[in-house]
Length: 263
Image 1 (spheres, rainbow, N blue to C red):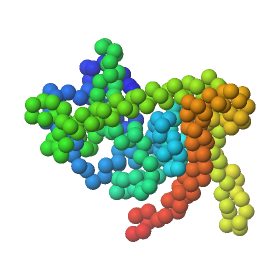
Image 2: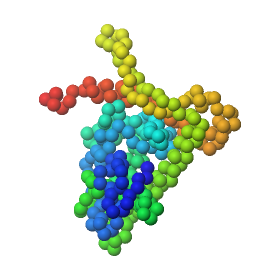
Image 3: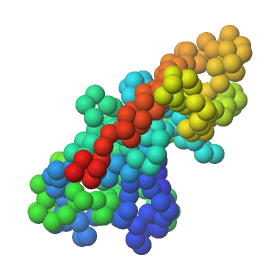
Image 4: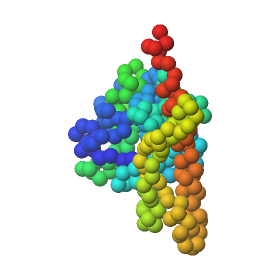
C-alpha cells in the first residue's frame, strides 16, 4: 500500500497503524532509530484486519480468513470480529504459530509517493513507540549514511511494493473475470437447552464466487492455473474456513473473566 506525500510533512491521508509518518532523512532522524520494546506488536492490537499481498495467501490462509474490501478489492487478513486483534496477546506478540503479515512486519517503515517529484520515498512513523533517542538500531551511522539495518528495511519496503503491484494485477484479473461476490459470515449460537439460537451476522465481506469460478471456460481456468492465480484463489477460498475458528476464539475470550472481575 503506497500513500502520497507532499514532502512538507507527513503522508497525506491516513495509513493503518501510522500516526505520524515522516520522510526518512539524516537531517531529521540522524540521531534516532529503533529501540527494543517489550511489546513490539502492540501497535496492531487495536485493528481487526491487516492488508495482505497475494503471495502471502497460502501462508496466511491457515491462520485467518482472507477477504477483499473496498472499491480496490484490497486483500485483508481478518484477525478479529470486533475492533481488536484476537491473536496478539497482552505480551504484545502474536500467538505462537500465527502468520504475521508483511504489512505488519515492515512497521515503522513505509513507502510513500512524492507527488512533487513522482517518485517513491521511504518514511517512518515518528509516533511509533519503538522509534526514539538512544536507539539499539540507529537509522544512520555517524557519517550520515543509512545503517545496515536501515538498508535492509528499505529493501523490505521495496520488495513489498513489488508484491503490492503484483497483488493489484491479481485483483484486476479477478475483477475483469467478474469473480467477486458479496458474502456474509454468520454464527448460530447454541442455547442452554441444546437448541440453536437465532442466526447472528458477524461480518459482510467480498470473496471469490466458487460458482463463477467453476463456470469459467476451460481455457481460462488453464490460464489461471499456468500463471499461478488459481493457487492463490483456492488459498483464499480455503482460508474462509477460518471464520469458524475466529468466531470460536472470540466467544471463548469473551467468556473468560477479566482481570477486574477476577479480583
